[in-house]
Length: 120
Image 1: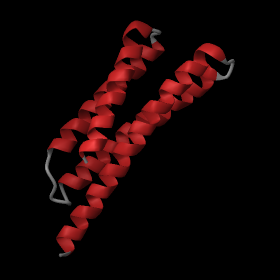
Image 2 (image 1 turned 90 degrees about the horizontal axis):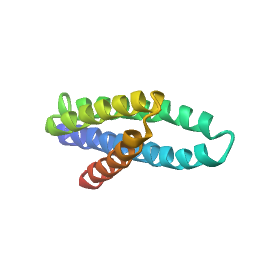
Image 3 (image 1 turned 120 degrees about the vertical axis):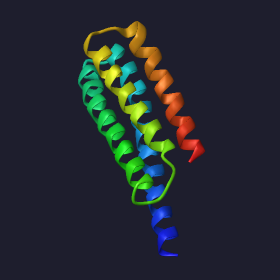
């Protein structure tokens, strides 16, 4: 029973991390709109990028904790690692000012994160 409770706790942390990542990606879309319309938009979007990247790292940590000590499946670790790679590419594209790829990738990331959240 302790093992099951521990596994459930790990999966709830994984769900929380996935929700946080999804929320931060959504807020990046909001701050992108402000980037176009407000003087403080660039600062907000830049800070949001760091928070989103941190949320992606937290997602990886939660997936590893749910998998290794929690006895869960390894698939969330692969998904979380993929998101971290996408987040890294997203940050590089944003710094390089390549909106033609940066914006669609952000939409894709939000959609994939939402799917991952719903599947948990």
